Length: 217
Image (cartoon, rainbow, N blue to C red; front, side, top):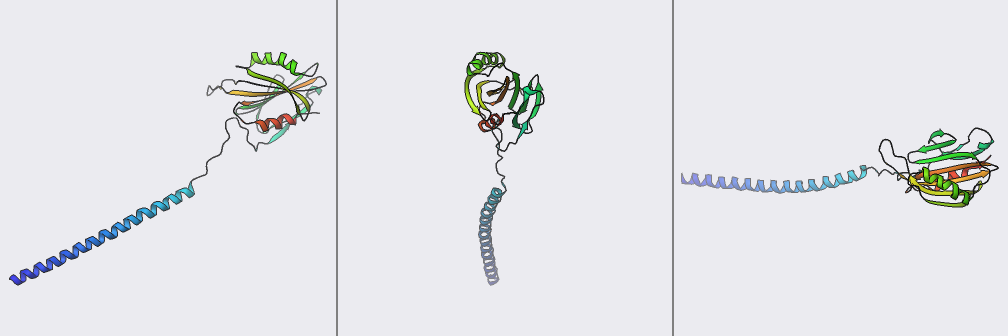
């Protein structure tokens, strides 16, 4: 009986040792698999995420006219007093009010106003006549500067200034605008070309394309 008891004890110890060894090996294997699995998939996930991440959308600051803007020739109909052509941005909304034709897109506007004139405009006449008129018409008119510049059509009087836009009927916002007003003249006919947009917009090149395209015909 004592011998049988010892045999059971030895068998029990052997089974216990085997179970312990098995558990120890299983834990080690599981740890290794868990560590490798957590590291490898995370790295792969980051790589895939980086590949699928879309490029940032490019946009122009408010008021900037795109570099790829297309321009078309505007040729008014009428008598000899409107004998001119000028390029305007394609696709802009056109409106007519009185003798002024305007092309507008978002925050930018091109205004064309042909008038009769007894003589060619000068820096003095613009300073003494036009500036006071605009001061009474443009909200918060400021920083007027009158000069003579040369465009394709020849000598022209340029007036630059700033003013507030009309309040947006939807958002209620008011934009601070910069204006360039070119006074072209030939044989008793004057055309005032006014270009406007937000003061922080970089529209030097587009405005040069428009103002330089003016041609008498």
